[in-house]
Amino acid sequence: MGEYQLQKMEKKLRKYIDEDRYNHTLGVMYTAASLAMSYDPELMERAQVAGLLHDCAKCIPNQKKLKLCVHYHISVSETEAKAPYLLHAPLGAAIAKDKYDIEDEEILSAIACHTTGKPGMTLLEKIIFVSDYIEPMRSKAENLAKIRQTAFSDIDFAVFLILRDTLIYLKDHTNLDNMTVVAYNYYKELMEKREDFE
Ligand SMILES: [Fe+2]
Ligand SMILES: [Fe+2]
Image (cartoon, rainbow, N blue to C red; front, side):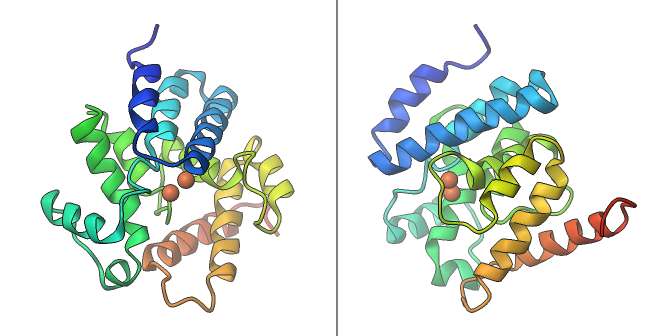
């Protein structure tokens, strides 16, 4: 048995998220475990924990989300105040620490940046970011088949494709978090430096 009591966490989480979110969560958890198997099996358990808890704050009503951000001293940007659903990521990290006793800073940061990504993500952070986008229940995004395939052989390229498609999708939205743009520029530059990139 590993360091974490996954089944216990799963049972607790189930009370706080609805059925659709729970099914998505299991998809993310197992996709994250699979990506860890492919890149670094030693990350598997931590990838499962981060996958299981990544949306733990998703089903909290928006007003309560804002209140909890004050409680946990999470700064709220103008965009986040207008679109509080964005806060479920940093708030999820605070709740994972406070209510699920997660002390591992990398697990917490993988939860905190799973929606927007960020420059220079660690492998675990990339695994959660990508798993959230490609897990089997997802069906709407463009290029899903290509991104799913790429994720297991070239995770940086998969991160780049997701950020690119997210920006295209959010083009006309006012609720675009600036961190997505910053992350996109970082991974675009990373790709452009590679010889195999066209
Ligand atoms: Fe999320
Ligand atoms: Fe998610």
